[in-house]
Image 1 (cartoon, chains in turn orange, red, yellow, green):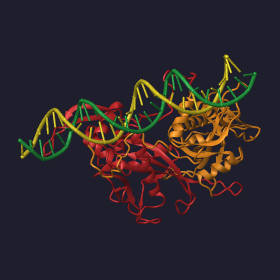
Image 2 (image 1 turned 120 degrees about the vertical axis):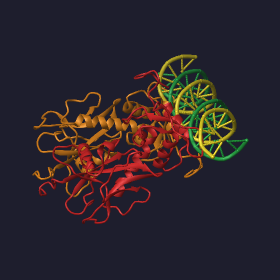
Image 3 (image 1 turned 90 degrees about the horizontal axis):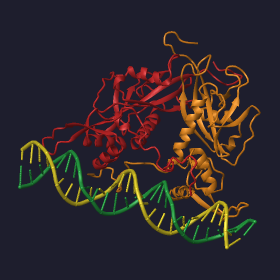
Image 4 (image 1 turned 45 degrees about the vertical axis):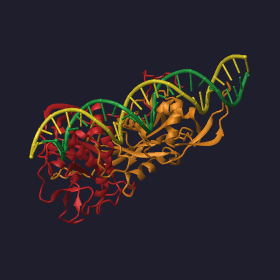
Length: 239
Length: 239
DNA sequence: ACAAAAGTGTTTGAACTACACCCATGC
DNA sequence: GCATGGGTGTAGTTCAAACACTTTTGT
């Protein structure tokens, strides 16, 4: 298989998905337990071989369909390529990893060997899948701050308290409902539905419900610094 | 080659580099002119096949060595995978693209078929290489704002004016030297060398020289919003 | 009335932009 | 002197965190 004159090889390519959601106050990822060697009884990210007629994104969507209902996946984005020659035993396989998100109100049926696991307490994982899951977590955390990606974790309508729980779980620290409300409102991401949620058994003011204005990811805080000058300024004299 | 039962194939993998630098007020990329079909006389990004014993980053560094002196490349980072089945004619090739940067004071020798081209005025490009170059440009522009990646464009020592030219060219709009100075100083990225540059023929106060404190990329503006609460606050009550 | 939860008003502070002004050099 | 470019002082704005306080419900 290896061409001795160049050292190049026709190698296999797989796609892997870190499918994340928030449930019970923690960030979870879909893993399946390997029945066979290599790495039997260790847990893997869903995925599989890239086919000849599909690009990597089409592939990950097809592969996911075998584990979870793809219609329940609210966001898919490329993470990175993992290509260490020995990342899996046997013939070489290069992997393209994806970050996928499932809204918290959906609970897609999973095959019997497959389950959600908290990212804080992963079971023994196969190959480099723990690294990939951890990269997915980092990516999500970053994007919560400067994009509208919260829409992909949230149900179609939610109260600010519910949204706060989602953000807190995903970020790993307590988020203030007050400030979360204002940041998202200032950016025009929240639309009131007009409905209100019923108070719990202990009473309390009914919470207003909101939805996200957009359901496609967009950068909402594009320039932290070094913004373009106010008056356009393509060539404006400065300082 | 194709396995009829699964549709999977052992396919080729290439790595491609968008090597960028700033010169003469514009952002440039290294391209080589294809002599042979396919896409003869169109311009390509440097790169080549992934070998069996290297990961994609090792591969891009090796491939680059054939075009530019790798020691002159100050930063290398993965961009994305490009995998459309028809992205190149003939047998399928999946590509991992990289963003690479060369400091402005270096002028590596290039082979005769290879040259720097301004990203604002690219010649006819081969395959999907224009898309890749454009993604590299976007990535660089974003990272200039929230990381110290400027070090990879700048010479070892520079005046604020010189640095301003680099940032302006890379970002595509005029940056204020005053504010650039303060933003970078506030973040602790600039170290005065003690030296000063000589004024030009028209006079003017001699400019102080600086260097970047770090020569590895680091995120300097980690959270735009939704920072963790001040007193750690892993579980602090908020709101 | 009281507790609980939601939501608003307001203060404080940090970070960045803009612009005026001062400094050091060549001619 | 005065033009030229470098550098600092400082006001003004925006944005977000913190926290006090009001609102609306259940018991």
